Structures are given as structure tokens and as C-alpha cells.
Image (cartoon, rainbow, N blue to C red; front, side, top):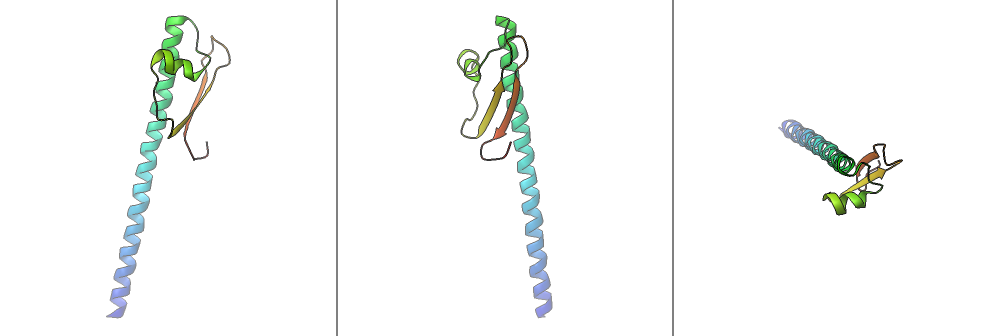
Length: 100
């Protein structure tokens, strides 16, 4: 009787761990999608600037001020490295508090 109770408890604990791992993986996938969407949003704003002004902006703040770029600055860090006005900037995004 005791053995059945212990096996049942162990199976319940194992099931809870599997569900937690699945939930974490789903959460990571959503985060990856959000990162990709934010990179695309920054890229589109930079291309819109290039199309209308004939140059890529030198700063992310210019895209925010002139092209309405908005994102959650408390959650994400956006790296925007502009080399030259006629070369697409290098854009990277990562979640604040995580290693890039």
C-alpha cells in the first residue's frame, strides 16, 4: 500500500516537471518570435528612412523620433550599429537581463 502511494507521488512529481519544462519552452518560443518581430520592426523603420531620405539613420533615437518606432525599453535592449549612411545598420535585440 505504501509503495503504491510513493509511486503515485513520484509520477505526479514527474508529470509536474514535464509540464513545467514544456511551459518554459513555449515561453521561450514566444520570446524568440517577439525578438524577431522587433528586429524586423527596426529594420523596416530604417528602410523607410532610407527610402524617404536617401540615407540610413545614424541612431535608434532618430527612428523613434521621426518614424514612430516604439518598443518596451524595460524588457528589450536594441543594438543599432550604423556604419555608413548608405549601408544597412547592424541590428540586434535581446531581452534585458539575459546574455546576448
